[in-house]
Structure formats: structure tokens, C-alpha cells
Length: 360
Length: 273
Ligand SMILES: Nc1ncnc2c1ncn2[C@@H]1O[C@H](COP(=O)(O)OP(=O)(O)OP(=O)(O)O)[C@@H](O)[C@H]1O
Ligand SMILES: [Mg+2]
Image 1 (cartoon, rainbow over the protein chains, first blue to last red):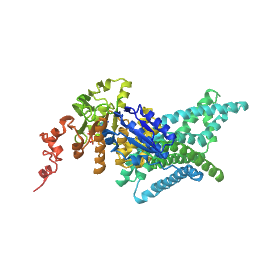
Image 2 (cartoon, each protein chain N blue to C red):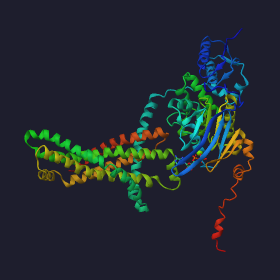
Image 3 (tube, protein in one colour):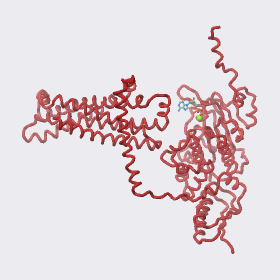
Image 4 (spheres, chains in turn red, blue):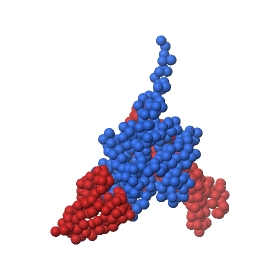
């Protein structure tokens, strides 16, 4: 009995290989016992062409057809001597679709893992800062100064701008409500209390997460990828003391100082609006602020801001240091540093408010 | 059709494929290359040697169109690379492969996808054939077993081999290898040499190889250039360069410390006897 034969054209390269593959597929569908591919007429080829031949052999094997080659030239044999056809046409192990539990696990695990890393880093940083001096390890002030320059000084213009505009906006919102009762003077209370208690620390921390949390994650992640972290560790320089602790302290300090700036500038904005639109003298506004705000609230607000800042710093560093998959991982860590950072700010805020209200 | 064995089986046409004229590179105040002239012939294996930091990678970047020289010009197949239109430059790039010293694999793609990427983006081959070609190229560099891994989980030598597979994916007319065998064991290095020579022979691909590995250079080279102090110190057929009488070339080929190196000796002047 005779077997079907496919004859390749004179040129077997990336422009013509599609036809050969289609021919082989068509013959395979008739389920012959054996199929010949004749390459005797080929006088010019490239690896795409021979790739098509191997693709045909793989398809034949999958279809249970024996595929034989004919008329291989010496250059083709030279080419095939670089590869193992056996290895190439070995059928792929079909990847099993994971069961629902495994898939749920793959979804949840990175989150749990991330949360645990953040918790562990928090613990490590606390130890480093509180017990470090006992072990004669001081905070690296030189490195902290560099970080403060970026986190605090660098963010000053944008913080001041946001604060001023928000002060105006809050005063405007309050004015619209209070005008009805002729109680415009309470603009000071509304602006002062909301800025100091919530909006100041929150906005500062969010700006910090966007500017510095992302920076820390990207920087440390890139350092992991290029093995700089490993090199530091090998040299006996602990990344925790050399990189992480200064960054966390700088973020905490930045949130605190920027928070104060925010409060002051926002209240100035509010006062400006009250004076220009509602006709409240600046003296009266200041006096009203003084009765509305309490020192204890201010201290709590500062503590809150510093905690927000430290949380942002810890999240960025923790996620940056556990980067695994090269540039892809750096991107993911940077995104998560901002998202998780902002989420954590809200959680800490809730905790603060709850404690404060239960104690008072 | 830029590829294929249309240009002779190993028989070297005499025309020059790449020509560099008076290439000069300055980074700030430092002059790295200082008037390098060379021509790479179609279908040859051209080896670039020279001490570390002498500007071999820089030379490759000039030749591939990645870094314009401060002075001088590069022409590929008769076209001035740095005066070419963007379309022509794109076309010339497709005819060129480069395996970077550090691999430069895309971290978000598996090894197989990395090798398939230029085929997928630049040809309209059926997907099955694209994968088959990529797998073939991986098998050539002995990496088929790692096809599904991400670059971040490869060893240094594996990254290098994956980069080589990617550089030859499109059967380019000319491939530049930046230290293809650095960091590889002798057997794998010999396999890479074999791939370079065979592809050169079968498809007539012009191979430009930067290497410090003397045995490998001797095994694969048709012609060799040696760079010293930013200039061409020797250029010619392998055996001529290998037997060049210039003492600095002899030091390099025979792996000797240069005679005038005073290291370890001048401390004597400071000894109290
Ligand atoms: N982007 C750059 N900016 C400034 N200097 C550079 C830059 N790239 C390279 N150099 C300098 O140019 C010189 C040559 O570098 P190049 O990478 O070409 O060396 P090489 O010969 O490939 O060395 P090796 O064998 O170690 O890879 C080095 O001294 C390096 O410091
Ligand atoms: Mg180099």
C-alpha cells in the first residue's frame, strides 16, 4: 500500500512554512498510518522552515501517525545536529487546572503573606529602635537625614498647596451651612476641628504613601533584584539598620512635621476665606479657634500622624524587601505599597479614634 | 528575504556587511574609543578581544545602532546607521540579533515566551510554529528543560543562554554576542561555540563575538580584532593575530602580566633595611 507524501517547495522559510504546516495538518486529518514529508526539493531554508517541520512531527505524534522525512540535505542535517528532535516532539505534560481550593489559596495567600511580612517588619523595626541602643546600635542619623530630605522637605510644597486649598474649601462648605443661622463665626470650629483631628493627618499620610511609600518599595525592590541587598547582608551590613529603620523614622517624622504644617496652612486658608467672604476679622477667628481646640487633641493628632507615617514607611520597606519576580515584582510591590499603605492608615485611624473615645 | 541560506554555505562573500569608520566615544571627559576603524565581512565569525573596560560592549552598542558614537560612523549593508530613517533603522534591527552581557530578559515572561517574543511580534508565523522555533532555539543552548521558568529563577549562565536563544530567534543576518561564554562551564561554553559555528556554516549568519575566553576565540574565529587603549591594536585573520609580534598582544594572548607592571615592586623603595 502507498502512503501519502507531502513535498515541500524549493523555498522553506518563514514566508512559506505556514503552507507546509497546513498541508501536514490536512493529511493528518485523514489518519494515514504513515506520512512522508519530502524535503528533497528544498534548496533554501531557515530555522522557521525547519521549525514548521518539527511542529508537523509533533502534530503527527499527537495524532498517532508516523511521520518520516525524506531528502534531508547536508546543511539540514548540520542544523538538526544542534537539537534533539526526540526532546522537541515529546508531548507537553498537560497542565492540570488547579481545583477551587488551590485557586482560592493562591488568591488569599499573597495577602496573608503580605500582612504577616508587614507585622514582622513592624516588630523588627520596633526592636531595632527600642532595643538597638542597648546593643549599642544607634539609629543611622546620616541615612535618616537623606530620607527626611526626600520625604519631608520634598513634600513641603505640595502639602502646603493642598492644605491651603482644603482650608478654603472646608470654610466655604461650613459657610454655606452656617450662614442660614447667622453663625458664621463657627467656621473656625468646623475648619479647626476637622483639619486637626482628621483631615490633616489623613491627607499628609496619603500624600506620603503616594510619594515615599512607593519610592521605598521600588527602591528596595530594585535593590533585591540586582542583588544589592544580598551584597549588603554578606558584607555584614544589616538592611534593617542601614535602610529600613532610617526610612521608617524619616516617614514618621515627615508625617508629624508635615501634619503640623498642614494644620497651620489649612487654618490660614480657612481664616482667609472667613475674612474675605464672611467678613470675620482675623482676631475673632483666632480667638474662636483657641476655644475650639484643645492641647490634648493636638497631642493625639500628632501621635496619630507619626503612627500613620511609620505605617506607610514600614509597608513600603516590607513589600520592597520581599520582591521576587524581577521587574514585574517591583511593579507589584510599588502598587501594593500605596494601596496597602492607605488601607493601613485608615485601620490605624479607626483604632486611634476608638481608643480615644473609650478613654475620654 | 533577509535570512535563509541564500548567501552561500560558509563560502565567504568578500563584501563588507558592517563598516565602522573612525569611531570615537567620549563619556564626559573620558575617551573610551579613539578612532576605531574596522569592517566585518558577510558570513564570517568576527571575534572582538581586549581587556575588561576597554570598550568592547560600547563598540557593540555602536555597531547595533543603540548608542551613537561621539564621532565617526557605522554603516550596515551600505546604509549609514545613524543617518537612517526610523523605518530603515527598524528594518536593520530586525536583521540584527544581540545577546546582552547581562541577559536582559523580560522579567514578566517565561524563558520560552522571551525567545518567542521577537518571532511573535515581527513575523506572521502560525503560533504553533513560533513555539516550535523557540523550543528549537532553546534546545540548541541546552535550555529546553527550563522553558517554562521565569528569568528570576534562572542561574546566571542560564540567563545568558536564554539571551543567546533570543538573539538567534529570527535567524538574523548578523548576531552580536557580548561574552556568550563568560560564567559558563567549559562543556556548555563549547556547546555555545558549536551553535555559533554551525549556525554560521548552515545559514551563513555573520557572527560578532566579544570574548575573553582564549580557547573559544581560537576555536571559532575567522578574524580577530584586539582593542587596547581605545584603539585597534591588531586586526586580521585569526592566525595572524595569534602570532602577532606586538609585545602587548603577546601579553594578552599568553595571559601574562605586562612586563612594565610595577605592582608589588615599588613597595621595596619604602622598606627600611
Ligand atoms: N553609560 C556610560 N557612562 C559612562 N561611562 C561608561 C558608560 N558605559 C561604559 N562606560 C565606560 O566605558 C568603558 C568601557 O566600557 P565597556 O562596557 O564598553 O567595557 P568592556 O570592554 O565591555 O568591558 P568588560 O569586558 O568588562 O565587559 C568603561 O571604562 C566604562 O566605565
Ligand atoms: Mg562588556
